[in-house]
Image 1 (cartoon, chains in turn cyan, red):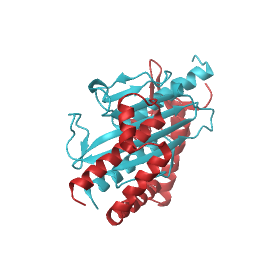
Image 2 (cartoon, each protein chain N blue to C red):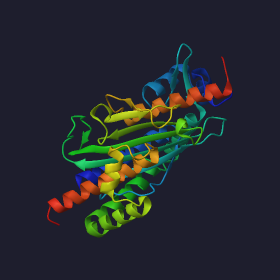
Image 3 (cartoon, chains in turn red, blue):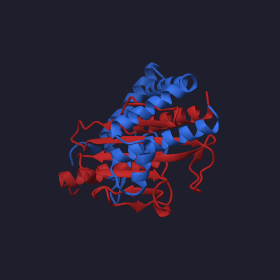
Image 4 (spheres, rainbow over the protein chains, first blue to last red):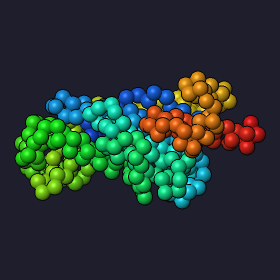
Length: 156
Length: 146
């Protein structure tokens, strides 16, 4: 097994464990292109108690070698060449999504950036450091909670 | 508040343990919680249900590492077999799929993405990642003389 394939397996397992911890249901990868160093995962948050529905999509592309942009997104002799984390919260519009991208095609200050929840796709905010998967999912859970409170107009 | 989110004492009652025990579960990362300013922590009922499911599964010894861990690993291993055995054919197939889906070559897609000629949507970002992956793989292939 190549180092990159090992890395992809570790990443998929790590993401899956986090999703499971938060009660998400993980769907089988639509297409794992390990030959390219790419994997994708989709997870759905069930809403049996009146919560807000959430769909998370994760895409990561790992390429051998050191990080060329000094972002230190490295593991197993590879670096994260491209990535996207999309959380669709309670609706299907771009404004219902919170998205975090690693996009090396963008200008230097936007190599890691987010498209904030509640704003259209065109809005990008610089992010200095890519949050760990655990941290990012927790941030999404906090967003979901706030969205839930807003939709229930609660004040306790 | 509807029952979708619980306070620590409510979770303690459901788990038949002390609030301190619940705080320990949260601190150890076994039960995720959301910090709500000034009013303490909240635990989603979905996350609590997932925790109880894991407890039950552990008790009956159905698994250790998680069903999904095995499932995902199998898929990645399958892909690895493709990587090792049918690399060239797969690369051409992935490129053809990309071109069929987008109507553009990976190189042209990358150019338009960089020039902001494509909408900055989640779906287009996914396609950009695929395009970049194809381009890097093709560069590596030509570089290695294969």
